Image 1 (cartoon, rainbow, N blue to C red):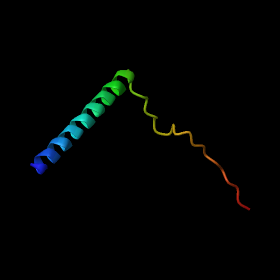
Image 2: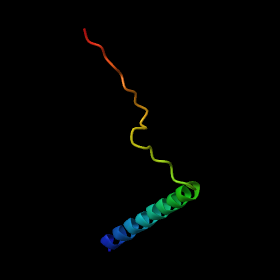
Image 3: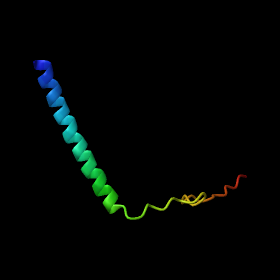
Image 4: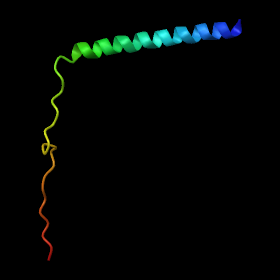
Length: 54
């Protein structure tokens, strides 16, 4: 009966973890009203630097 008890405990832990994940996903989806804007190509905040060599 020990394997059955171990499986039962593992299933209970998995169910608890899944419930926490589900609650967190619900919380995140409720706060994310609009998706974050994706940067357009070339709009990465980089600058072009010209280097003069002698």
